[in-house]
Image (cartoon, rainbow, N blue to C red; front, side):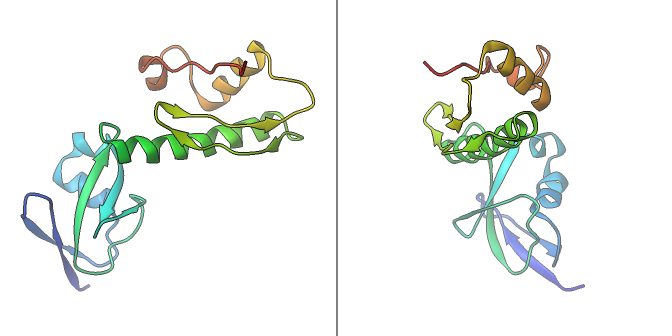
Length: 145
């Protein structure tokens, strides 16, 4: 399988087979760091870590510590939460759910407003118990209002 050259932010280069995912690349460099990588920045464009390497490129791996990493994380989290809401409340209509400076919000069109018990069910569906990583960041769902 042909190899392509990946250039990293420090100028170092490594060869990888075409078809290697960016997650595999970051894992091969630093397994611990790879668990914190949120997205790859390839030739200046943000791409999913599961995207496959196709050609020579420059790559930077972003974490939640960067503004771009936060934005990607919050954007993805809003979609995951919307899926959980649709699982629990199939008649809920999705409106908008943008990433914002300190997280994200999502507007839902539902017959009755969510109550704290509903938020608990949504969190449980997402796996956001008291021992979750999100809880350790201080995340808790909040009703609008």
